[in-house]
Length: 449
Ligand code: FES
Ligand SMILES: [Fe+2]
Image (cartoon, rainbow, N blue to C red; front, side, top):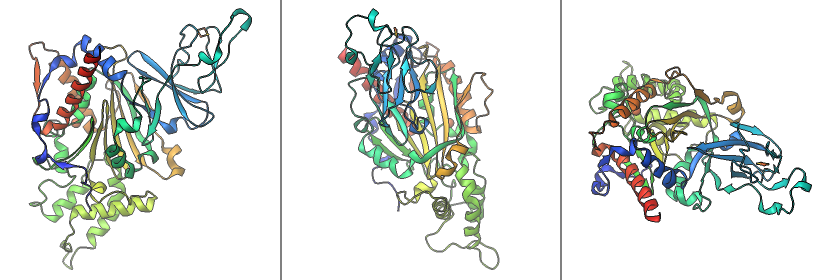
């Protein structure tokens, strides 16, 4: 079975719908960065963490985007709520750490105290306060919800429900992976980059740069024009190029097997699956040791079968996933700033945030590797967030290091005022889709202003 129901081949895409010439000032202009703050960052659902970071009532964390700060807290009713991180009295910051645990929030300025549900429960020295309707002075609430184990927040109090924003296709497409049961393992890192946040999104939205930046991946990613499948769901989407040996039709079976063995170590599930894969391959050798596959079986289907068996034995229910999801990495994008490659049992996420200072030439990126582990092992193997303060000091895996260097080089070029537009090519369809959505949100905000 192949999971392609809601995806279409690139040959069916109407390219005329998308912008292919993109003004470069959206990466460098402070004025546009301010407009973007209003039109995108203050308007849309965005991921603020993982729900399992806040397991108990009273657990809280802060989330900052640009200069706006929010508190996300789990209430006694187990519900997560979001609040503007400012005291209702005279606006003092309530929480200035990244996370904590408390039965109540007391503002250090004049000691007003709020419950985890945001209610104002006490003021200091009521004799000095005069008449005050406490019920009208709770913290300012903003929408918070969860999906796929992620906590989403929306700074806009009038936001549409998260499920509507995500679309039913995104929800149905991601559900079978059981992302909510995955844990950050091995890498959870945040670092300031010298590039606009959209440079990061663009870089992870296309495979065209593999030829220039990640030549070692060409062994397993077959960049044939027309090979990719696309799912387009509102502003979000998924693209997938089959994860298979380049030119499988012309490579010998032994060469194909060797290519799987040589897969970069950035795919930990493959390493786990290799012993069974080797057994299954050896079962197909004749007396002379030559590989002879039964009708319909290939190196790719063997990898898929081994992956399904290993993950099932580990306890992951993969029954909702198709065979191609055992091998192929799907590249998901959730507008505005979340990119994820995912296949059965593992995922890598890249998020880009505008720099808190508002400087369009900088951003923060956060890269996290997720693995599905049996529940008993999740706490033990969970990666803690590393905040990199010394540029170049974090050992990213090869492909990420290559992107890290490339993105900052691109921003340097984009700053040249003589270059007014960049030119996208058809292989960069997801980049063009991203910019179409960006244009629409910016235009909508202009229309509303
Ligand atoms: S500003 Fe918070 S109690 Fe006065
Ligand atoms: Fe890349």
